[in-house]
Every structure is written in structure tokens, then in C-alpha cells.
Amino acid sequence: MIKEEIGLFNDLLSNTVLWIAVACWAAAQVLKLILYSIHSGKLEIERLFGAGGMPSSHTSTVCGLTVGVARIYGLSSPLFTLSLVLACIVMYDATGVRRAAGEHAKVLNQLLFSDGESMTPSQKALKEFLGHTPLEVLGGAVLGVVLGLVMPV
Image (cartoon, rainbow, N blue to C red):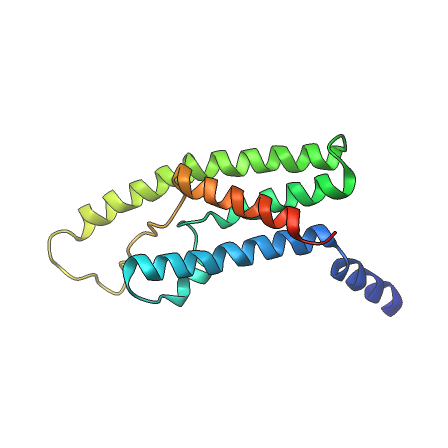
């Protein structure tokens, strides 16, 4: 039993595609923190784990995953097809539905809290950092592809 668990753990640790995806996510989140800090003039560590912003970490992750799968299993493999389709869905969703939800949240927050009254403890502003602009998705895609190409497999 323990030997099987150690084997599974070792399999995860040696999964190159997984590490490429994790590195792409981490790099995007760190870049997002740096760019947000430069743009806003303040350091908000929460941006390391938040959604939205430049570059898209979801896009970076799935693009790095797709490139890693292509490098290891080839462009004709079903795993590559699955990864590519997943990447397209994630990028479409980031610029479509999730971005619209973020825009709706901004409008709702303005309507709910524009009268100058402060929020009560039970009221909470909606998250506005949802979705991405096409440029943020492109930034995530470039980051993911580049890291997917340069990381060792």
C-alpha cells in the first residue's frame, strides 16, 4: 500500500507536463502582481492568487500544457487534441462570459454603493477582476507557449 502511494507521488513529481503547467501559472501570477503594482502604484499580494489582469494565468497554464503535450506526445496525439480544445475553450471563456461577468459586477457595485453610504457588514462588493481583455489573453498565451518551449521535457 505505501509502496503504491510512493509510486503515485513519484509519478506526479516526474510529470513534466504538470510542472510546465504549474510554472506557467506561477510565472503569470508573479508577472500579474508586478504589472499591477507598477500600474496602481501599490503592492497587493492578493493579486498573486486573484483572477483577472495581465497576463491571463488560466491561458498561460493551458497554453504551456498544450505545448508540453505537443513536445512529448506529438501533434497527432489525442492528448494534444484534448489540450488544444481545452485551451481554446479557456481563452474563449476568459474573453467572453467571465469578462462580461466582471463588467456586470462593476456596474452593480456602482449602483449599490454610489449613494455615499458605507457598506454594512452583511454587504460585500462583487469581485470585478473576472475575465480578461483580448490583450491579457494574448499575453498569457505568449507566456505559456514560450515557457512550454523552453522548459526541459
